[in-house]
Image (cartoon, rainbow, N blue to C red; front, side, top):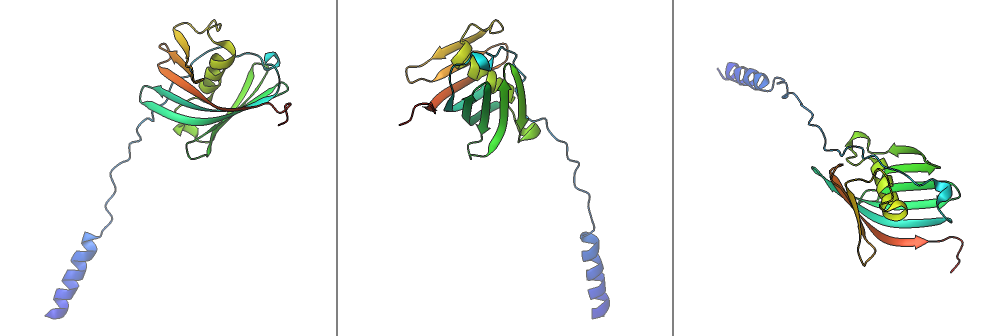
Length: 172
């Protein structure tokens, strides 16, 4: 009598462990800002060679992201690298003249188009409000050197905070 009971219990356990299909995974769209058009200053018009370290915070609809920025201008080439708060490379851009090549290390998980960061960098440091496509946007500078770039039409605001500037032609 014991053996049939053990067999029945084993069969019940096996039936209970039968594969049950998991619920269907429905991917939710990740929050992402739209591409925000704007002008760039041609790199040959930017004076000197330098390296800038900044922090940027971008806030918009369902997006609140922060990146460390390393910007190097050498000759006619401008390179911008965006770093996550953990120091991992999130994206990079290279600008020569007004042509731009970008690469996202986070793919579709990157909520801020790298080109927006580059345009905001230009708006903050090189264009200010001279940009003809800058309608509906504001640039505000704080006493500590922070620059706020707001765009109602693009639905987000960036705050750039300087960390350091290095001019390689000047030796300490």
